Amino acid sequence: NAGVTQTPKFQVLKTGQSMTLQCAQDMNHNSMYWYRQDPGMGLRLIYYSASEGTTDKGEVPNGYNVSRLNKREFSLRLESAAPSQTSVYFCASSITPYTSTDTQYFGPGTRLTVL
Amino acid sequence: GENVEQHPSTLSVQEGDSAVIKCTYSDSASNYFPWYKQELGKRPQLIIDIRSNVGEKKDQRIAVTLNKTAKHFSLHITETQPEDSAVYFCAAKNIQGAQKLVFGQGTRLTINP
Image 1 (cartoon, each protein chain N blue to C red):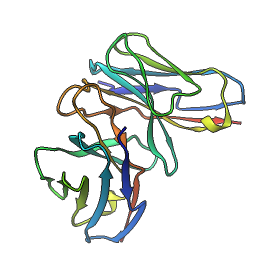
Image 2 (cartoon, rainbow over the protein chains, first blue to last red):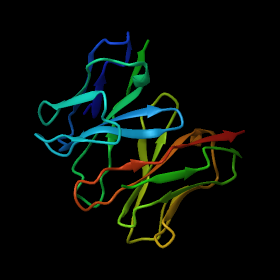
Image 3 (spheres, chains in turn purple, yellow):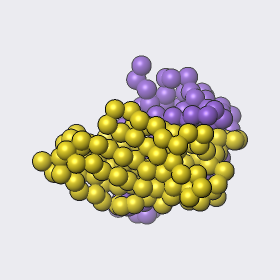
Image 4 (cartoon, one colour):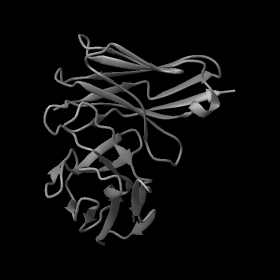
């Protein structure tokens, strides 16, 4: 099993450009998440999908959109990139957030720079 | 909503000594507290977790303690080794409903040989 995979690994954009970050998991998990990681800020939740067909905003959703394409795939789109969106983006998945443990498994991350 | 504060932001200890990282949370309904380790350039990975119905959990050299009354929990690493150098994140959530995992700001632990 590959676990959680993300593409691309690195990306440089110019202000105003758009792009989509792709995430896929092969663990048959119901829930998927997108986080951004900035120095000194920890991991902040952008959007999540508790189950296929549902998506909800997290702590920092502005400037982003998501699509839960199917049970395996959850994409994050930046419509008009801004320098403030320079960050490392992590996708994660878990079986379900309704159980007494909710171990989240993370992908390798995408390092995005917006010039 | 939940807010998690983590201290210290950086910690440097001598190899073989113990390291302690502390977190406080604001939502008394939170009942699940995992700790993640992130090595340089790698993804965060779960190393230990605790539920609110227990006060302490151990796994070899690492342990987590929980004080529900004070709303704080701590990670203890004994006999530290160079491979323990990493950033550690605490987190908290309420498992009732699809509540979100809220992370602390992280602690960069450096083990000095």
